[in-house]
Amino acid sequence: AGQLLDQDLTPASAAIQEEMQRRLREAIEQLDEDDREVILMRHYEMLANQEVAEALGLTEAAASMRYLRAVRKLRDLLVPT
Image 1 (spheres, one colour):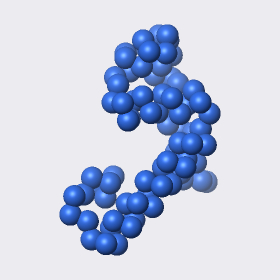
Image 2 (cartoon, rainbow, N blue to C red):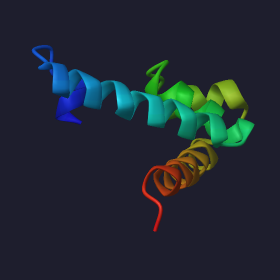
Image 3 (cartoon, helix red, strand yellow):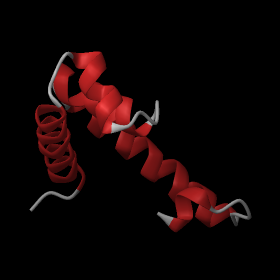
Image 4 (spheres, rainbow, N blue to C red):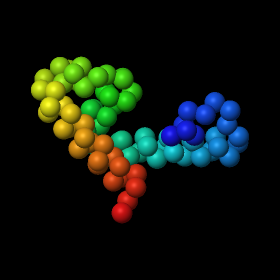
């Protein structure tokens, strides 16, 4: 995570960062639409769980569960077992 935020990157660190970002984009693209939507809303649009719930017409608990399942699927895509 630190490499993704480091502003003073060496060429090697920059290459690693680009590769990590590419892998993340590809993994997000592999998610189904509902999972991708909740990940993008939470992490790219920086919406709070309550805002996501309202936007999707869900309860906060349902939005939270959908997010948790999406994060687990994303993790499984990025770190195969």
